Image (cartoon, rainbow, N blue to C red; front, side):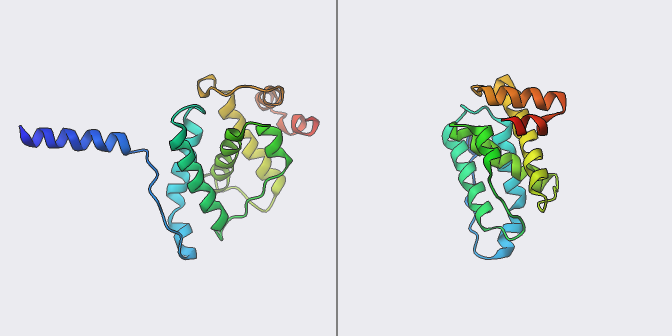
Length: 162
C-alpha cells in the first residue's frame, strides 16, 4: 500500500510540473543546438495553449525562447512592422508571433535568408493560432483581416494593405 501511495504521489507531482520550463544554461555555442528540441517544445506549448491559460507558465516559456533567440548562432531573428501589425497593443501576441517564427525556422526548417518569406510563414502560423476561438484572443480589425486573408490564401496582399 505504501508503494502505491508513493507511486501516486510521484505521478501526481510529475503531472503538475510536467509543463514547467527547465532552466538551460547557454555557456557555449553548442548548447544552443542541443536546446533546439526544448525550444520547439516551448514554442509548440505557446501555440497550443490559450492566450489566457496559466500566464506564469507562458511567460517562462517565452523568456526561455527569447534567451535562446538572442544567443543562437544558427538563426537570425528580426522583427519588423509585420509583428506590430499582427500583435497591435497586445504584448501577449508578440510572444505568439515569436513562437510562430521559431516553429517556422527551426521545426519546419524554413529559410531564414529571405525575410519576407519568414515573415509570411510566421504570420501564417500565428494567424492560425488567433483564428481558433478556444485560444481566447481578442480579435482586432487587423487580426480579422489577417485571418480572412489567411483563409482565402491571400495573406501577403492583406498584409500590404494594413
